[in-house]
Image 1 (cartoon, rainbow, N blue to C red):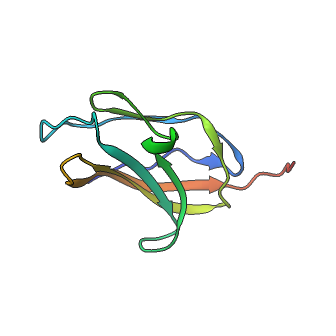
Image 2: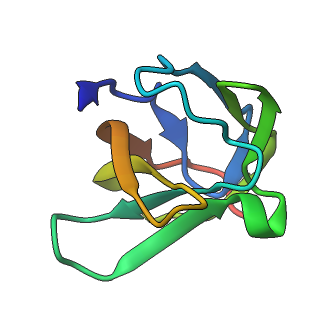
Length: 110
């Protein structure tokens, strides 16, 4: 798994999104794959935020380009762990990338 730390994000603000271009090491298609990113406080802790293709919070743009589009992210300030997993149509699972994500506090609340 490749390590990639997401840019710091302000709590309860619109996340500007991120794009990943993944290596197609196995020559498989993502055409019918399920892709998801889970954000947790630590390994094994409850999922605090999930981006996934099934609800449009994560999008497959090109054969191996995956985008998290701009969207509101409501996470408490802290440093979280995340990773991106692909579940292929044949049932195989592969985690390609993951890292840390720091959510910073903000002064102004609404």
